[in-house]
Amino acid sequence: MELYKENQLKIYNSLNKSKEDFKPITEGYVGMYVCGPTVYSNAHLGNVRTFMFFDVVYRYLLHLGYKVRYVRNITDAGHLENDADEGEDRIAKKARLEEIEPMEVVQRYTVDFHNVLKNYNFLPPSIEPTATGHIVEQIEMIKEIIEKGFAYEVNGSVYFDVLAYNKSNHYGILSGRKVEDLIHNTRALDGQSDKKNPQDFALWKKAEERHIMRWPSPWSDGFPGWHLECSVMSTKYLGESFDIHGGGMDLKFPHHECEIAQSQTCSGVKPVNYWMHTNMLLLNSQKMAKSTGNFILPNEILSGKNNILPKAFSASVVRFFNMQANYRSILDFSGEALEASEKGHAKLMEAITFLDKIEADKASTFDVKKWKKACYDAMNDDFNTPILISHLFEAVKVINQIKEHKAGLTNADLEEFKTTINVFVFDILGLMNEATQDSSEKINGVVELLIKLRKEARENKDWALSDQIRDELIELGIQLKDGKEGTTFSVN
Ligand SMILES: [Zn+2]
Image (cartoon, rainbow, N blue to C red; front, side):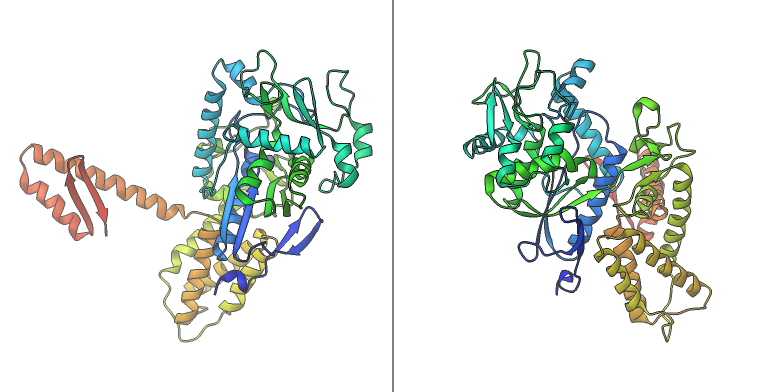
């Protein structure tokens, strides 16, 4: 039986501001969309927090036996510098400043993003669509919104008519903002804007003369508004209504609010059942900002090349640190906090390494089933990773007691205990045991060295030494294979 049948997951739904039982639209299947990065600069640590949390959500849903389609987009056009649909396109601006093609900017930072995610042990999403790969679909959606009477064209640009939409729908349903307040609070744009009302937002923008990123459309040569791509791509790959939509809480307004308005206009149905938002990340109790120097890149944490942290930290320690906080709480990143996490992480991994040496006892002194249920209960309670980690430390305590012969587990209990720890630590939290990783890297290095020495021996026609290296490695369970491309090896 699939695990999801015995695990009722609860999700805090930002739409209703309450924890709700998770019921997917189609039993056994989950559609999840997470707003991805705008690839105009290096991956941001705050964003990495968000993606890391959804990586754990994805891993847990898979573990429960759901078939998950996880879509996380890449914004490679249309994201302007400010939310009022003004300013330069972020990617085009970077291209201008660095005197390179916009697509070079996109390529450079997409590669950086993937590199960071690989270093931090992320599972790739099922689909990673790009905005520029979906211009045709975006134009079609704009046409549909115009037909429904909720968008208008002015001077080659198309805007969503928020007031018209709000007559029969609820603009502000997610963010709690009121349209009337938005009118009063929005700064007058000094007549620069073509918008009928300041709270309207762009679906299509006519490109200015010098704007390089442009596509033909019925209205002008231009580019789509940023909010549109997520409506288009989520609908295309997950359907008009899907289960989970995630992102950082800074995206709630206007981005997600606009997404709801666009999608709801076209389909007439509620686009998303569960909205999930991660809280922000602080660095040394302050907002991260390049301009103030209070800034660090995810890869700089791993290399130690930065002025913020006292030393380098491993990816697994950073993951562990992230998971020690609830995703809906503010996370304060600092050297001291990371050092504390590093100690906890080492204790956990040390205990796990010892697990294999434990021998079964006649009787169990620890209730493994009860403990295992508590681990699942923590994750079922809106992915409460800090509580899960506290249960994992209970397991560490038991392992240490067993080490000192003060506790014991029967064979069956021991097997269940081992499997559960491994599942939660490695499969679900995505942590890595660097101790075993390090030693396997070292073994690889040593074997490569022996292959090199054997090659030299053969070149010197020292067949005795060459055979000795090969045969003694075989005895250790390492098989050398000579091929056209050189010698490779496999470990049995
Ligand atoms: Zn989005």
